[in-house]
Length: 286
Image 1 (cartoon, rainbow, N blue to C red):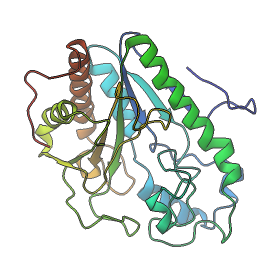
Image 2 (image 1 turned 90 degrees about the vertical axis):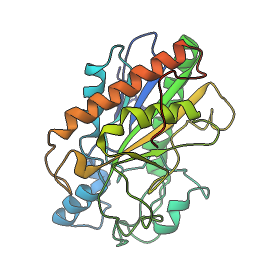
Image 3 (image 1 turned 180 degrees about the horizontal axis):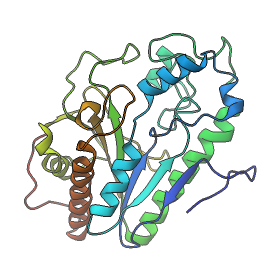
Image 4 (image 1 turned 120 degrees about the vertical axis):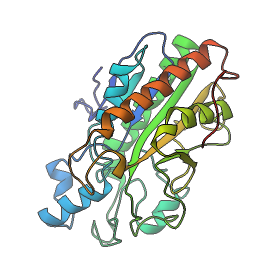
């Protein structure tokens, strides 16, 4: 399901429809390496440096993991996939002073690289990029969640990410644990049952950790902290489980992780069908 930005341009993101009965939206914000030419012109890196930065910052192949989950599951979830690199805008950041990553030049529009080198010129104005890319993306995600609420009475966002085996210099909490799978939670939007089900689904990869090295999960601001019908969980997969780092090809772990994500989605469907309270058979492990 494609859409257009307010200026009439084709949107650089896509909502892939799932089953009408599914409340689940798989959100894949950081899988792309695409940078439009006019945005590329403002980046201070040469082509080789940019390729290395994209290797480090891209959650490579996560769109493929999400697609495998759709194919392997009993009921198809919806998928919202960003078609642009997070070097254009990062749709998961706050666009204002609430964003802690702004302290290292990696707010909604990055001005620094993963190694804290200059990415954009001093005094760069982020407003045009926010208007062209960030705000339309946020509105489209809000609409996707609202659509699932209207159709099913619930919305469950599963935020699909990956992260490098070794911490990068930009990470504010890089000295924490780096488990095979990190589950990011929110005190308001992540029920214990959802976390437990994810721990079960991904247990075969060596265990899950909570909120380390990355914490939290994505919820559209229209619903954040105010609508308990919207649940959310971030799944951060350590890249050595499925690919050659930093930016290489995927390996056989990709299919296995797609199957685990499908098991999580199937479990969510069962949870919602049961009233969204308890998940019989779900165990800890996070």
